[in-house]
Amino acid sequence: MPSSFRRQAVRLRASYTRETAALAAPGIARRIPFRDGGLGLDVCTAAQRRLRALLALGMFNHGPASLWPRHVSLADVTRYTLVVSPRYDDLVITSRAPYNVTCWLVGRDRLPQIGVPGLRVENSYDEGWRLRHLPTGATMTVTADRHGRLQGKPDHGSNYCRLWTSDVPLSEEEHAALGALPHLGADTESLLAALSVRLCTHAPDGSWDIGMWFYDLTDRPERGYAHHRRLSVEGDQCTLHWDSDPHPEDLYAALTDPVVGLAGTTGHSTHDGWHLHYGRARLTAHPVAYKP
Image (cartoon, rainbow, N blue to C red; front, top):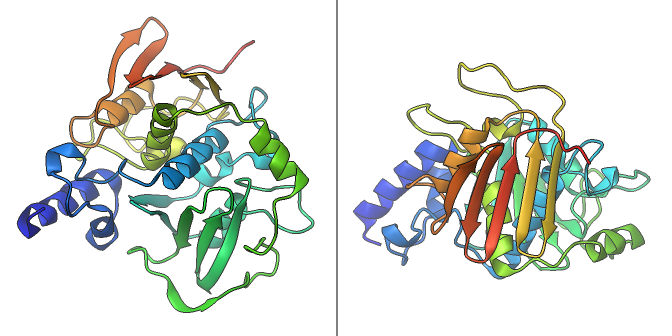
């Protein structure tokens, strides 16, 4: 990608993702044409795709109808102001409360919360962590630096002494959580991963806004405060229920937007939500709480 087009792509991506230009730039593919995914939100390794799909299952299951046990729920991550910056071989999260975010992602000694099963602290920095997902080898970065940098010298242990580090093997609870997951095909993983990386996206003109799945950043009334979510997968069919923000039309726009949407998606509205296709995968959205 020529440097002038790459700079343009960086600015365009940042206008949708709330990244700084310095944070967005490493995620822009240098050799992929702009029309073929040059914004880099969905171009990643298979290991990254799998980790991002697991994040979606954790973040979008919350409340009485959750399909994941409470101690592996990640929904509370969305309570913090943060920016998600996907890269080809890393997923960077910047936040003013990086320790709080990391504590929901990574398990800790003597506490029931285990976060993403198999996610560990590989190195600690000044207000930042490099995380490693043991089952896939994929990495995450959580930092207070708004440009995504890790400051200071790396420490191979957890500097809070409670977060599990990469030398801690998977626990029985983590093995059980991973073993209970449904089979996820590549297209299904891509669709779920697309939900994760668009956690903070919005339209530059203000026409839609995901708002971290916790509050509406436009002038519209909020949809509710219970934040009940249920994301289920059966074969290639994904079904999502939620009763709070974001507005259903906003989530549909984020996934299908001609600039920042997941390339190759098609969809249509239904009487009680919408339906989306991506390759073999399908996502049916019901913007109401799940009722058995």
